Each structure stands twice: as C-alpha cells, then as structure tokens.
Image (cartoon, rainbow, N blue to C red):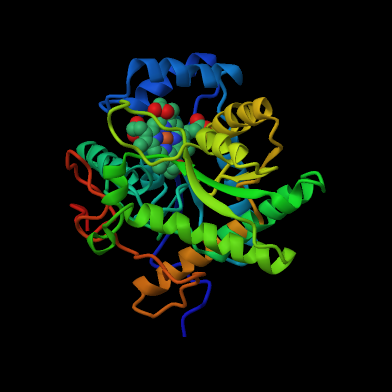
Length: 375
Ligand SMILES: CC1=C(CCC(=O)O)c2cc3nc(cc4[nH]c(cc5[nH]c(cc1n2)c(C)c5CCC(=O)O)c(CCC(=O)O)c4C)C(CCC(=O)O)=C3C
Ligand SMILES: [Fe+2]
C-alpha cells in the first residue's frame, strides 16, 4: 500500500512564474527580458513602462508569489506532505536557471513544476516549457546533473481554482448598489493573444476557432455563471472579453477588448458590470493597471458602476488544489490511476503536452512534454 501523501517520485516542487520589477531601476531591464526577440513595438514598451512607474516601479507579482509559497508550505506541512517548495521566474530574479541550480545543489533530481498560468497557450504553457529546456541546457553546459522536470497539468477547471473566483464574483455583485445589481452583466477577462496563437492552442485535436485557450476560458466562465445562478437565483448575462493586447495593430488578436465591451454595454443601457479576471492567478500588474486603472477609469467616464472580482492569489483552497495536483501526478508516475478532480465537461487536462501542442512560430526545444529532449 503506498501512502496517499507519498509524493514519490518527486523530491521537490518548483513554483514557476513570470517575475516582475521590484523598483524603478528594474523596469526597463525587466521589459527587455520579457520582450527579448519578440518584436513588441517600442511604443507599446514605453506605454507598459509607464504602467509600472505609476506603481513606483513595483509589480505586485513577486509579493503574490511569496504569499503563495507561504500558503503552499503551510498546506503541505499541515497535511503531512514532506516536499520542499522552490520558486523561479522567467523574466526576473529569482531566475529559473539560478533556482534549478540551487535545487540540483540541494540534491533534487525529480521536480514537479507548477506554472502560474492555468490555461493552455504558447505564452501560458509552451513558453514556460521552453524556459525550462533552456535552463536545463545551461545546467548541462555547467557540467551539473540535469534534473527531470514534470509540469503539472492545467488547473483552470480544478474546484480549488474555480471556487474562490465564484466567491469573488458573488462578493463583487454584493458590493454593487442594490438598484443596479439586478441588471448587472459579468465580463470575464483574460489576456488577449494573437488569434493565430489561440487557434493553435492545446493539443492538435482541440485546434479550431480559438483552440483550447478560448474553450477553457469559456468553460470557466460557464462554471462561475452556473454557481452564481445556483447561489443567487439570478442568471446574470455574461461574455468572455480580452485585455492587455500588444503587438502590431494589423495582426488580429482576440477581441473585444474590455474597454470596448464596457462602451457597448453602456450603449445597450446595462446599469452595472462585474469584471472577473479569470485568466490570471493573482492581482498582478495586468489586473492592477488594465482593469483597476484603465477599464475602471473608462467606466467612470461612462458613469457605469463596475467592480473587479478577486483572483485566487494565495487562497488556501488553491494551495490545497496544488497539493492534490502534485499527489495526483505522483500517483500517475507510480503507475496508479489517480482520481483527477475537474469541474464541467472538458475533463482533466493532459499530464504531458502532446507533440504539436501550442506551437511556437520558431520552434525551440521545450521540456516537460512529449517532444522534450530531456526524458
Ligand atoms: C496569455 C498571457 C498571460 C497569462 C498567462 C501567464 O500568466 O503566463 C500573460 C501574463 C503576464 N504578462 C505579463 C507582462 C507582460 N506581458 C507582455 C507581453 C505579452 N503577454 C502575452 C500573453 C500573456 N501574458 C503575449 C502574447 C504578449 C506579447 C508577446 C510576448 O511578449 O510574449 C509584456 C510586454 C509588453 C506588452 O506587450 O504588454 C509584459 C510586460 C505579466 C506580469 C505582470 C506583472 O508584472 O505584474 C503576466 C503575469
Ligand atoms: Fe503577458
């Protein structure tokens, strides 16, 4: 009988995130890291730099990841799960390669990886896998042991991710003035990406209009709408909309933008809107600027009452979900058939990204998938 809390074969968990600047001097080098070789127009970079300077050059994302680390360690220790937790980022310190070097130095060879992105897409999944491959190659070049890294499955439909967002939407609805609440609309938001990236997101079988990226977000929106209907008796009208678009204007990205959507709703006489950023795991800069600053100012200009609902952040139910995901994957790696928790109809996402999943425009080695050069 193997222990239900047995994380074997894993000897550590790595929290893999985006990273963000921690002061004014960090902003430009951070943006240079983010956009390395990606052809973001300079105008857009100047614009994005301003968002960070408005907040003293500090993105909240690192503090939020530190809080998540604390929540994970607390949850693991309370549940007898003996698994050290590390943290590394794609674009800022602590950098992924440095963290992996430290992990290998501490003797870890089989690492479960949780990315702070719940959905399929190049930016939210394969790009992290490319970062892992690059870092493993760096360790190899230094003559260090190369650990095996396994990325945990997408958790968009895990109850520990969805339930805190349901509560967040209920709280935002409750916070609206009584007079406008009955007519409120729900605007679920996520990061816009090029439609070409959306259409090829997820496994090849899922490719089609919007691919897995749009299908997964629509599923989460429906799950939240259903739960809100059950608990309030009201079927609030809703739509999935987008934010934080970048890239050249002639390239099609997912639309409509949240600000255009607010305009349209206002034009239709809708009296209030709850903006629910289901595409994000924490209230980082994309939420703080694009929703709480820009879209909220737009709504004020229209005289449209809006509320922005909370992301999961370091919610204990999310930490518990991460524990379940680690143990689920460990059980699968042990050759058992774990119970895979997933709400709705899409089912639990794959453990191993198949070949052709979320392709890059210029193919690069990616770890933790069926096409990984590292076993
Ligand atoms: C799908 C997606 C997520 C969600 C999944 C995930 O969480 O991974 C996400 C998260 C984030 N995106 C973030 C910041 C940025 N994203 C950029 C650029 C881009 N994002 C894209 C997509 C996504 N991005 C894309 C297709 C681009 C353009 C091309 C490119 O460069 O790949 C740029 C460059 C300037 C700009 O164009 O805006 C910045 C500064 C931060 C940090 C916020 C903070 O500091 O608190 C976070 C969490
Ligand atoms: Fe982004």
